[in-house]
Image (cartoon, rainbow, N blue to C red):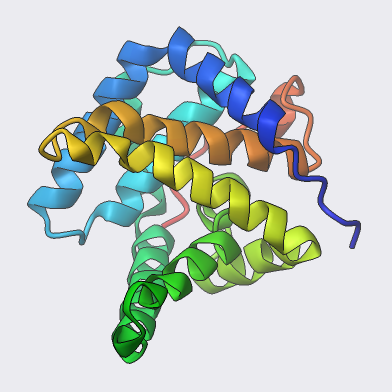
Length: 209
């Protein structure tokens, strides 16, 4: 496998431009996703993340007709693998953090490691129809070729996305879309797929699950 070329500054710049040009749509889509995730105590976080990924990739590819905020609910087409993905990854992070709790702030390290290793999993589920475990393995296979720069990118994207939490937590819906934009651009850059090729874009067929 070729080594992944992580381009932190260009990807962040492209993500901000995508976020700026489609601010309202991204805000509404992520607001709906966040509200449903919180209302269901995280049970639907996976499908909502899949829906957000669908919307951002459609914008990034310039697909026609243009996506709408309501397309975030298309994440339910990948309900089972997306649900199991967030369940397994979330549980692994929680267990690791609990075991390392005596180490103080270092207890957060496993979460960012796991988040980095699985950063492309949701895109593998949405675009390639993988089951949750294959998507987790597939993401790790991509990321491990240049893990540390990718970890830095994920950390920066997560930091930006979390900035809104300082505004009594409400402002996070303003910054959360940046994380999806950054990871979507990274995925499109490393997936080896031509966004301009209509046949290679997000499948529009019937739900697989």
